[in-house]
Image (cartoon, rainbow, N blue to C red; front, side, top):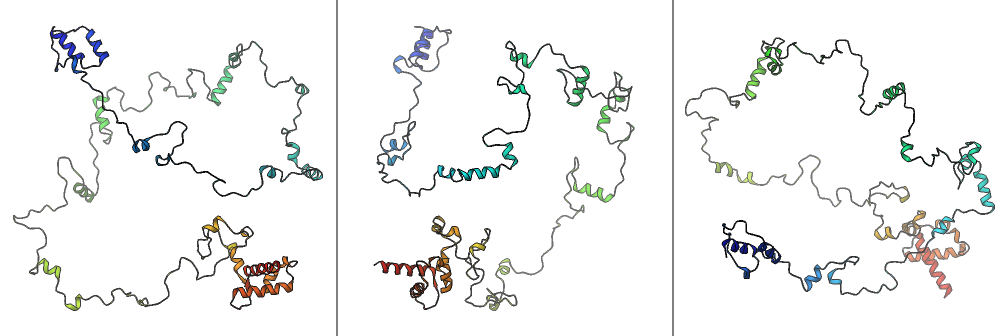
Length: 442
């Protein structure tokens, strides 16, 4: 066996079975060149082994990592084996059945004589005549008689043999005249395909020359006497090309400041120091005095015992008229303004942010009072009133509660309060009336 065939077999052993068969069938093009690497032989198996795979999960980990399929509801892995409870009478709170859609549509329905009277009253409006309900908008146009034919159609009726291309690009059509196209070109800017836009400027005669160029030139020759580049770089010089930058006379103070504050080419920037020459050993700064106190003595100080005591005004106000004093009255404004009279709800602005202590709680917001829609709150039932005021409020109950009976109810309501005052609340009146009615039934 030649070295080339051995090399071919060693190379073929690094592939899988299908690739090994394909390589072995190919001819070795360089039999004199030995193969690289170590020959493992056919019994060693493939050199490139497959990558390690992710191990399969089992137990609680598999239940936790399990994903739902298409159309399956996602359930927590800890609740997969938990049965769903019976809904029974249903979840949530039952709502009170109100009016349905049919009743809402029939709320404003009129029939018979009432509907006729409404139609007569609406007939005087111009919109009722021109825009009748269920019919088209009447504009009062009088069309010719031929339009009343059921076979009549508006628009151009093309022949049967005419195609859509001929309708969009008709043939045998007289083109627009030059005057019409000139008008469209002037008013609408409409030009033909490939036509140059012209503004019809009237230039002088020398501009119409073929070699004329717009712009101003200093010389007629092409290279500006060899000074074209110099002219471009020295635009601040005089009109003569051989001149230099004109001299500008300015204040020397500004020039001295520029020399000191700006950087200059080839020179270091000035550090704002004087140019004096100091002798060797010169020390900058101010010399200290002859005091021999150390830094520790300065930090510790040499204060007396009286000076080291706290100041007499420590923690006290030093401004005249603002001395601290003990008092039981709290300072500042309370969060709940019980110190002022609360504004009634009906007169309170929507933008009022003052908390009077009578705001509704969460239960009151979710379940408001029965009479809140009429502007009567719960506090109105607990407010204590006189007998005459309560009789005026309950005047609609005179048939059930005669005036002589109302006096007994008022006295029973006063006993419910227990303070002996000649005023009681509407809540006590209702409770006393309920007790009286229950006693009569019993």
